[in-house]
Structures are given as C-alpha cells and as structure tokens.
Image 1 (tube, rainbow over the protein chains, first blue to last red):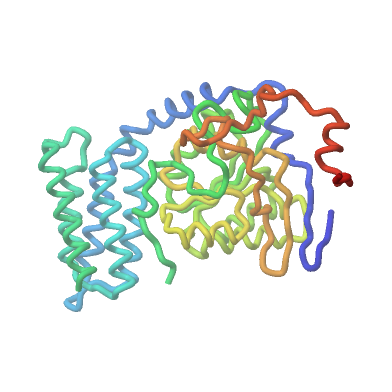
Image 2 (image 1 turned 180 degrees about the horizontal axis):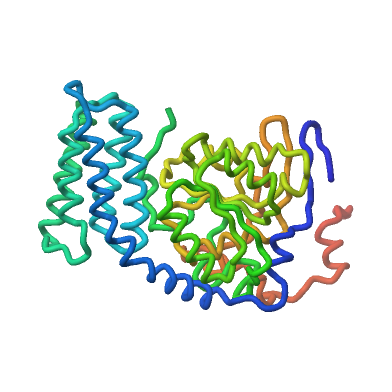
Length: 160
Length: 225
C-alpha cells in the first residue's frame, strides 16, 4: 500500500484472476459458442413475450389523462422499453431494436423538455407492432421509410 | 434528472463503452487464447430485468459459472453481498430502489478490503458520455452496454481478472485506478496505417557501444586551432 497526500493506492492479489487461472477451464470460443446455444434455447419463450411487452407500453399510454403523459409515466415506459431492447437486441430483430431505441430517445427528450404529447409515442408503438416478428412483411424500403418518419418526430420536437 | 440516451455513442449491441482497451474476438490482451476456469467463481447479479438476467444466466451456464446469485434490487443486493461470498459483481445502472452507481459506491466503502476491491461490471442501456463517466466515477471496473453479448462478457471478466490494475482511495473516489498505461493497439494490430506494432521487433541499426553512447551524450571540450 502506498500513500500520496490523500490518495491511498492498494495493490491487492487479484482473487478473480487466481480462480480463473485454475487448471481446467474453457477457451473463449468454446465458452461463447456454448453460451450462444443456451441463449438460443430461450428464443421461443422470450420472443413470444414481445407482443405482451408492447401491450404493456400501450396500457401505460392508455392510462394517461387529458393533460398528456407525466414524466413518471414516461420513465415507466422507458423501463418497459429497456426490456424490449434487450429482447430485440439479443434475438436479432434490428428493425424493432431501431424503433425501440428511437422510442427511448424520444422518451428521454420528453422528460427533459417536459413534452406531454402521447401521439408521437403511439406512432412509435405502431411501428413496434409492424416489426415485432423477424419475418415481418414490411419491405426494406418501407422499413426505412418508417424509421425516417420516426426521426422526423425527433426533429420536429427538437426544432420546437 | 439523469440524462439518458440510446443512440449516442452508436455502438453494436453488447459492445463495450467502458474505459478499457477493447478485447477482440481473438482474445483479451494479456490473456490471449487462455483457458479460463469459471467453475470456482461466485457472482452476484443485481438487475430487475428478468429477461436480461435470464439471458445472463444462460451465458454463465455456457461459461461454466454455476455459482451465481441473481437479485432484483439494490436492497436485496446489499443483503446478499453482506451474507454471501462473491468474487464478481454484475450490476445494472438503473435499479428500482436506488441508482446502480450508489450500490457500487456502497461496496467501495465497505471496511473489509477484500470486499471493497471486488471487480464490478456495470451494465447500462444508457450510454451517453455523461452516464458512462458517472458509471466510471462511482468505482465500477468496467461499463458494458446492454444487451450484453457472451464474447463481450467473457472479455470483460477476463480483463477484470488481470492483476495489474491498482485500487485507489481518495476523498472523492474509491475504485480501480482510472489511469492506464498505453501498450499499443489491441493484439498489436492497429486500425490506422500509422499505428505502430506493440512488438519492438528486430533492430534496424547496429547497437551502439557504451563508448559511442558516452561520446554521443557527454559534452566534451574541443580545441579550435
């Protein structure tokens, strides 16, 4: 241990390193392959819940009053959206992931700028429904258009 | 209000936004292609998202890390940490009852040195620079963006296990040292044509003798006629 002014530097034995270097173990490639296989075993169970997670977001929005959505409700939406982000990012739904990210960015913007308009959130939710499955019928060009339109919402509120 | 952003900086899912030199698919610097034994490690995971923890549990299973405890909030995390014996903590940045950064700060202020210096990986979906800086400054070893990918987690655990990083305690910060020695591009391969290899390589000129070095360095008097 060394001490300079109010700074103490501790050099500890790295217990994690000692344990990891014990005989046996697994190569990175093997570990990652096995982990991916185990994650894949969750695909059916976890992708089934995507619609119910979107519905949960809709329920929060449906419960908002005539004055629009409160910051607390937006934060609840953001927590729910994070779950969707994990699912879409892990199981390879890039379009849904892009929409959820856009939704989250807009939600953050809403909290910071005290925006209470729920219609823009509803538009995002409709886009989530469009891209909820891997085999979405939406063409690449249409998907691009949808994402462009969502980005216009951001631009509109930033400009305002 | 904590600022949060999903789009900046733009990175691939699971990619590190931490403050370490990136590991690559070919191995982590210092531990290239090394076998790691996860069977003796005990990990504490604090995250309220049951999908994220379900996925993390499967990653652990793939790694052979069977001894792990998953709790959903900071209070359960503190209780588990006090009653258990862990070698690694993985914590979400946003917990239902407290910020994940506060949980890390609590760990870093424990009286027992071994507990205080435990490697902590902080997970976050919000990767705006200010959040990453705040996550670093709470004393986490590494910050990893969600959703977490197995290869990224493997690299980060391996990197946390390297013994070179001292632990510092100051009035305002307790955690792993945030200064790093530059050791060149990851695995000796740079992204720019001007990046030099970390390897010294063969000499391009003959070595100087001590006499030559002395004559080069020492000032000498010369007589001018």
